[in-house]
Image (cartoon, rainbow, N blue to C red):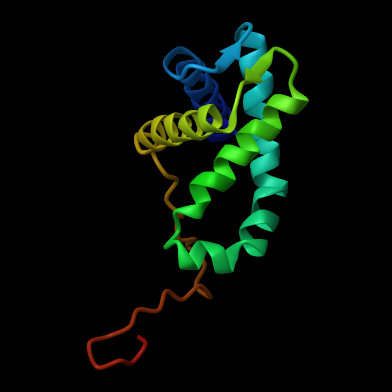
Length: 136
């Protein structure tokens, strides 16, 4: 739960930074940025996988660069749902999505990932593949 809240705050800070550095993106206050981060997270969970699947051939042809346009479209979509969060044009949304992606990637790289602990159950077997290709 702490990781989810931390990532939510990271996206909020990224949205605030994008509003500071990208002309054409405006956020009225901190509450608006928090709500925009929540809506962006929900859209990324529910809408983005559908768009990625539908545009998979185009993403393959562009070697994955079309994902940047999908992120910009989703950021522009968030501006329609959240009052007080305005994006003037698609170019501003594109630059804003780049800033948000870079800030989120940098900040999330410092968050420790949870390691899965092996239970002390005698029925639990951890198999490893040997050099000869056999599992042990």
